[in-house]
Image (cartoon, rainbow, N blue to C red; front, side, top):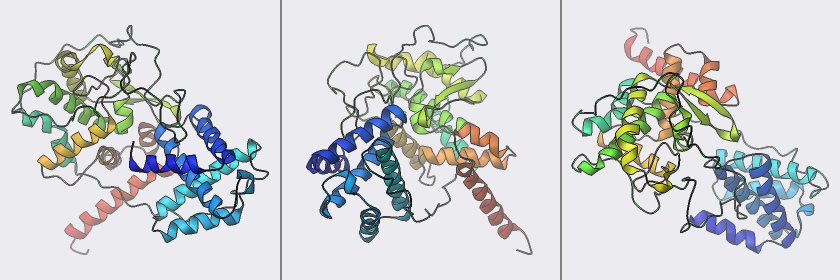
Length: 385
């Protein structure tokens, strides 16, 4: 548990009983009814716990005593201690969501946060690699191995989905039906069995980019190549890539089935290089790392559990650093994929669907990136610039 999570739990436990109960019910609503991810639940619960703690300091003892003055005082306090505009906007959104739920649940007599405004979040343009830099990063695992790669596997017949017969009915990685503690954490026994193979193993053994000097790291190298190909080749989120099962890969149509934010499912195509990397991994890499508890997870950690997003971020950063590239994360590869698609002439709506954005506004930021790159090229090359 992180320091922030511990602080949230401690603050939660110090709240009056009625407020604690409201927080717990709100967390349950987010996870089970709204189908929000564990990360979203934790963030919203932390914000609401902070709000209610501030309300207690202002003399409130129950959620029903909240009013707009308390909410505005809380946001003002957040700004005083240095919260960024984006953080303030998110906390205001959390307060509005909590207030709307509490009013519907008869916890609040009115929706007190409905008129609450928040500062417009400043959206920085994302860091984007050039196409040649992205290609070098994706191919880095092969270059570390001297450019050699296993013989290409025979592609399965069209329409087949390897592993489909063995697919279990286990809940997905961020299954909201799994019990949570008041701070939104999934309640599991870290030492207990994990029959569905959904637990990652990065916490028990350090995992990272493959070491070419260690022949036993060959399966890890194959895994790294698949990870990088999927992140850049499809533009999926790192949590979506790590949440893939073997049966989510449709080799015949070359698409992956992705479970995105809010439980929304979409199909995302991938290219021939990714297909080769997946074939190599499934034939020579995954069997070497798989253990009885691996389940149907497509990407595995060094100990055979499902690859953890934190580990995936470390892998991407490690290869980027080894190549002397700008500091980049899996989300940076997602930004790069979207920008390169638009620069190549892809329709904005198509890119929105590929990325799984619920709002077109989230996708439009990449048009700004493309325009900025165009302006930079113009200033550098045009004699009248």
